Image (cartoon, rainbow, N blue to C red; front, top):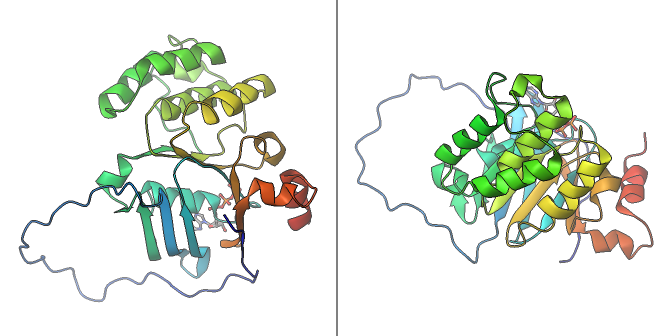
Length: 271
Ligand SMILES: Nc1ncnc2c1ncn2[C@@H]1O[C@H](COP(=O)(O)OP(=O)(O)OP(=O)(O)O)[C@@H](O)[C@H]1O
């Protein structure tokens, strides 16, 4: 893949959501439409001019990308550069102000969500539940959830499935959440800061085994500030700044320059 270099510039307000001036009218009855089907040849993730504005502030600015199957992609950028905003829109928990997202050729909706396993940046499960109850909850909710694999991962990560979530440390909560997300058989995994709080030994297992080895056919997009830790497992990276894409390239692109992704990132975003 040829690297895509995009000239940097300050974010501008080009699209703001405005409230409708008339009350919504009931839609006329429409003939049933055929449901869109995933297309094998379509990129797993495709975004065209994807934009998210919060009032006058643009969190993501005309983001365009195409990511094929089987890639592990690092989503990198300084605080506030739009990483979480992008992942939320692909996952369908936030809606674009403008532009388009497709997952395996499907517009974001119930069909695309069935293909996506999303790890949000903040814990979301009930503190009163036990870990094994969370597993049962996921198994009920997602037909592609692999309970045996989840137990294997928890065992390797040293998490007791009988623990009550409220009793777990921050890093252990992260391990449980990542297990729940990665035990699904999804086409696209969106991981928002998956290893920030976990200890270095668990981090190695998560990166080398859970991220790199378990899902060779799937695409994994992970946002992180731990560039040095993740760079050995990444195929490609996307650099964001002020909501705009600076660069989408294979990690080999920086290695050919005789540097590391971590050094490249630090140089690019030096304060
Ligand atoms: N709900 C919101 N309302 C208003 N502004 C928001 C909202 N969510 C995000 N933003 C703004 O959008 C921009 C991008 O935020 P985002 O969380 O996507 O960045 P990030 O790259 O994930 O940051 P970090 O590395 O700190 O997690 C920031 O300027 C942020 O303040």
